[in-house]
Length: 463
Image (cartoon, rainbow, N blue to C red; front, side):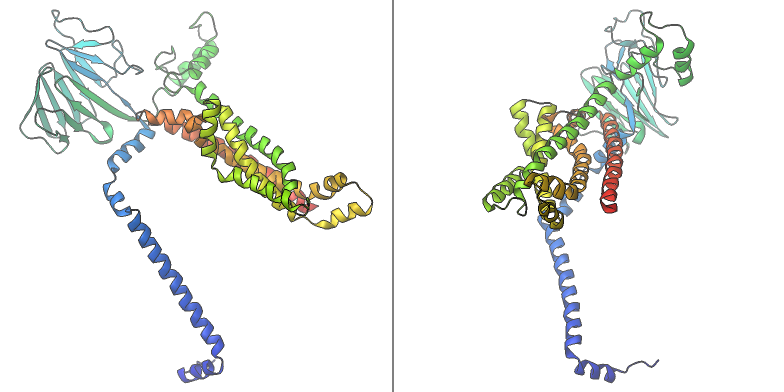
C-alpha cells in the first residue's frame, strides 16, 4: 500500500471540494464550540467569584464538622473558685458529679472548702490526660498545658485575670492579652482557658451511647453482659422483663432519640407514598382530557395542559411552604405538596403516553361495536398502564428523598428532625445518623421501585 503525496492529496481535494470543505467546517465548528465553552466557564468563574469563595472558605471548620459526623466529644468544665475547682458536665452528658471519665482525675479539696453545687464535684487539682503526650493540670490559681515537649504555664486570678508565662506556642492562640486562650490538640480535642473556667473538648472516634444512654441500667455494660441480663439475669425493674426494659431504653434513648427518629422516618415514607398515590389517581383521568387523540376538543386539551403546567411550575418546596401556613407544620402539609406537584407532572407524562399509543387496538374495538368507555378500557389502558405505573413507581422512590427536603421547612417527617439537629451546630453525629438512615431507606425503595418497573416493562414487552 503506497502513501499519497501532498500533490496527490491536493489533486483529490480539487476534484471533490464539497467533501473537504465540509470536513474543514466541521473541524472549525468543533473548535468554536470548545472555545465558547471555555469562555462561558471563565465568565461563570468570574461572575460567581469562585476563586474568592474558595480562598475565603473556612476549611478548618468544614473539617471539624466532618469529624463530628464520625466522632463524639466529652466536654468537662472546670470552674475556678477561691479555694477549689468545680467539675461539671453538660446537661445530657454521660458523666456527672459521681461519674467521671477515666482520663480525668482529681484530688479532693481541703475539708474547709465550701461545698459545690449538687451537680458538680469539687477538687483541688484536676489532671486531664488528652493522650500519652498531652495533658492539662489545673489548680485554683494556675493551668499547665503540656503538648509533647512543650509546656504552657498560665497564672489565674479567679474571675479577674489570666496571665501567660512566656510566649504562646504555635498550638495556642489568644486574641489579646488577658483574653481567653484556646489550646489545640488536633483531632484529640481542644481546651478553652479563661479566668472563670476551663472548657475541655476531648474527641473520640465512634458514636457515644448509641444503644443505651447514661440513664439506662444497661449503660457501660459489655454486649455479653447485656445479653446475659436479657436472657437469664434477675429483673432490673420488677415491673417489666429485662428484654422489655432494654428495648424501652433503646427506643427512648435521650441522646439519640431512636423512637422519634424512626417515627419521623416512617412519616416521610408515608408522605411520599400517599402523596404519589393520590397524584397518580387524580392525574390518570385528567390525562385523558389533555390527550389530543383521546379528547378531540382543543379548548379542553389546552385547559387541562395549562392546569398541569401551573401545578408543576411551582416547586414542591414552595407548595410545602404554602401548605405549612395553611395546615400548620406536619405530614399533611408534606403530603399536599407532593400531591399537587406530582399531579401536574403525572398529568403531563400520562397525556404524552396516551398521545403515543397505537390506534390499531382502538380501531379494532370500534369495529366490533364497542362503546366509547369500552374502547378506552380495552383499547387504550392496557397499552399505557405498565408505563404509567412505572413512572409512578419512579416518582415514589424520588419523592422519598424530596419529602426529606420539604420536611425541613415544616412539612414534618425526618427532614424537620434533621434540620433541628443541624441548627444546634453541635449534634453533627445525630445528623450523620439520620443521613445514613435516609440513605438506607432510599436504597431499599430504589431497589424495590427498580425491580417493579423492570417487571412491568418486561411484561409489556412480552405482550
